[in-house]
Image (cartoon, rainbow, N blue to C red; front, top):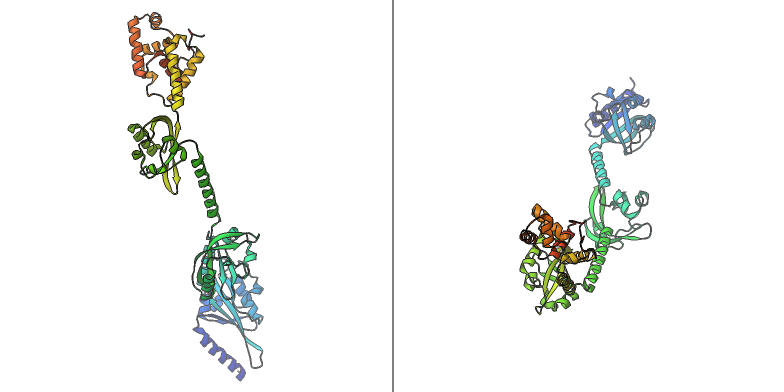
Length: 498
């Protein structure tokens, strides 16, 4: 064996001894592309235990292992790092994913670089493939990438060395209307997030110091020339061994629109409340303290505002009947609203008004309140009562009522008594129903007695019982009561169609 060969072999053994204990994987190749040697780290990075498991040469290696770039682009065998170094190519920091052919679940991520060792004359003598296992780093980066992209909060990542955006998530693109190509690689001076920020100087200083940027309001310019109100905050992070800033955003536009709509709604409510000719009172639902009243309430009840505001509904005592007031508030607490309850309202001078009161629950400045609306029915009710009294006085005998007049009387009674009495037609006996039906036909007591073949006193007793059970006081009221319930609809005024 020549001295030159011995020297070469000695150098290789020394080289192998040096690299055997390295944490980086090393594969040595001959110039003919055959795999000469690999250290333990290189074998572990391929999930094998012997050099022969890597294959005898570059072509066999390509048949045993599948390689692809991080973007899932599969490498053809001629682009494998082992094939490239076999062609004496020099490269560095090539990131590839390696898995055994037929077993894609076993996967490693390698950062690969090459070396071409030369002899004294500068001619290639040995080929070296050096790899680092960056699987854990790649998995962590992949998890971060997925989390970053899935985060519903709009966000970008700015590299601090050159202030360029290197990542952007879909939330930011959706919020702003930018495309990914318009953001990635763009300078922070072109898309200036802090241009209109309320604490711009502080944000810039924190970027220089690689320090947390506190939340602040900013106006973000959009690609269509418009702008959007946002809240922005920054958090430093290390990405690919480079200082970066994660900038996250809250879109204030929906909130601003809600606030504008709420303010407009409150303004409309306030105007309607003030200008309404109907008396209105607002009190808290919790303790019924009066929060506000409109001018119509003050004028109708003859109060000054300082005499009303701050008092409770009970202290104000404008509802004449305590039982009605208690029942009204109980119904509001239970149901949240009441419709057209007849109440008598006491004015400051003790005069009484007949009113229909309606109330509902409203939310004012995040406080549950009751809105009480009064409709003064005094004059109308007096007129209607006078009309009914006149009719009943002139036409004592119900047989003289025409069908039209009965219906009008029923409507008047119904208006003044919006809630029907609790008595039911089924509360009457069969004989009492017969008597009520004949009353509705307009028959007098004697005629009813003859029709039913009863004594007149018996008929009078039945009539009295019907009045008592139904809380009625006259034949006309009995007719109206039956009319409201659609009873004996074919029998109205058969004797008195005049």
